[in-house]
Amino acid sequence: MTELWEGGVDAEPIVGADGWIAEVVRRSRCGEEEVRQVLAAESVRPPTGWSTGRHTLEVRGVHFAGIKQLRDAPPAPFSFATAIGPGVSGFGTHEVNDAGKSSFLHIILWAIRGRTDIQDDVKKWLRGVLVELAVDGERMACVFSIHNRRPRGTVWLLNPDAELPWDGLRQASDEIVRTAFEASGDATVATPELTEEINRILRPYVQHELASFSSGGDMERVMDGIMTSRLGFESIPSWAARRESDRIDESDGTMGRQGWPTWSGALLISDPSIKVVLGEETFAAARLLQVYLGSPWAPVAATAQAHVKQLENRISVLTRQAEQASTAHSGSLDNLQQEIEQIDASLAALSPAPDPVQLGQLAGELQQASAAYAQANEVWLERSEAYGNTSKLLESAEADQVALTEAAHTRRFWHALKPTCCPRCETDVTPERWAAEKSGSCSLCASDLDLDLEADQEQEVAAASPQDLHQLLTAGESIDLDSLDDLTQTRLAILQLEEALAQEEGALDDAKAAA
Image (cartoon, rainbow, N blue to C red; front, side, top):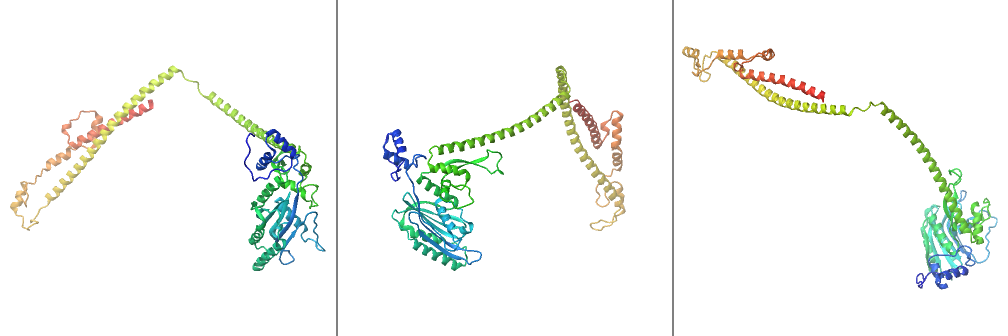
């Protein structure tokens, strides 16, 4: 460092660890006071073995309240509070067992560690807890409520000379839980106002809030952060093997960390079923002994051991993946080999490649056939269009012929009638009038009747049938078109077009086959 550090003036400098501080001063070429302030502000603590001196952890007082409910007794509100002085303190009962001695210790440890092994029914009874702690003389109060077995609360930093009113806390809490129970008659009634009242009573003795939490996991993390730095502990990586029923091989496990929840396990020996002297777990006993003895190599060795286990697990996982990949690739290789063999067999079954000269000749023939097909198709389209137009003319001519024939028959019918009088004025038709009609004049109006029956008969005779026309075409004789009427000429053209269209369709089919 070449400049004087100016930040973190509110951080409390590190006390003790003189040898470690001296080494940092020598290497950084800074003043001792500046080094202590910078390290404290950055939360850098001396490693295990560079002792900062003896630390003290004291419990100054305990308060808790709730509603007790036993199977064979009616619910009963309770409130307990006591100050704990320096030195050794003892709590006992007279001729009454199961009065809460173990619960009393577990409540204290709950506030200190952030976790608890307290019985589930006792946790259900509790409504509020206050535990006053002192770490190296720094006084704190952990206050939390319990709802549905979940803690929620705050850690306060107290004034150095604070004297908490334990009797007042007990009385106020007793009144709150008793009033809530009597008003509801429910032993599980929630009392959120209990911790509010406790915090209100503590307010004159509080400097500021250190942390807050809203669940069991939050509480454990909060107390870990508060206690680890103040008591000079470290958070050390730790490898935890999975249960035998869950692990794949001996190296299977997970990486975790050992911090305050582990180190604080040495504060109490309360469960006779635990077969270790220090802590709660067999694998952590040796680590606790190393930590509390202050072995400087213990954190390094533990960290290296944890990472070795992690690497062994990673190697095992990669080995399994490699074996699985090898098995999968082997199966894929066999499948590919089979596919190659099938393709080779298919290629062998194919006919040999044709001669290039022959391919050229075939291509030329194909080109000629395609040209012939295109030409035939064009002619076919032209003949089809002519056939369609002529068919329309034939239909129109036939319709006209039908109309003329019907008109002629109608005229014959009316001409065959012999009128006796005029339909307008009812004047009788005289014999003279009838005589005039024989000469071609109407017997009623003297108009020209234009009756040419012979011409009609000649026209009917001249109109040839389709069968006759077909015979004329197939006979190959020359036909005098002027001797035929218009209708017969049209029918003859239709037959000729049909013959040409049939021929073109045959040519078109031949061209398609050749192509």
